[in-house]
Amino acid sequence: MRAGSRSMLFGLSVFLVMLPAGEAQGLPDLQARFDRETNGVQKAKLLGKLGDAQFEEARRAGKAREYDALGLTLEKYRDNVRAAVEALKKQHPNAEKQSNGYRQLEMHVRKGIREVDETILVSPEGYQPPLQLVRQDLVGMDDELLKMLFPRRPVEKHEAAPPAEKPEATPPAEKRP
Image (cartoon, rainbow, N blue to C red; front, side):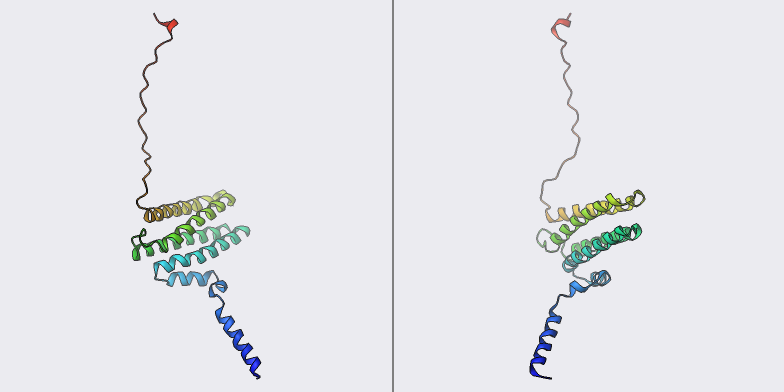
């Protein structure tokens, strides 16, 4: 083998090694990596790739009218979000001071809520209630993440104010006795 061929082979092998591994990974590989990850921040960051793959799988199932698979995929996404939130809270309880991971997770959960909303719109009525439960769970986790990231924001008060008593109107002048 000539020296030029060897250097070209070496360059090609270096190039192949340097390719990003995440691009070639499928949904099962990403799910396995997510399940093995113990670092809360890394788990939250990995959820971005895994969630995007799950949304793509859900879209594919929706186009094929496989609504059971679509629902299971989005339920698994919700469960993954819950696992990432719990891992972050366990390792970094103060999100205001250590926001890395929380921010990425909150943005992806917001994206997930939009995906579920779009899915609910195109799904048959019989499949909508479980998807609405997934949406409610995601909204609850998103609110929790926002409260953890911004604990000192003003709290909205939704208390109903008692109706003010109106003074009795005086009758018009021509009707007075």
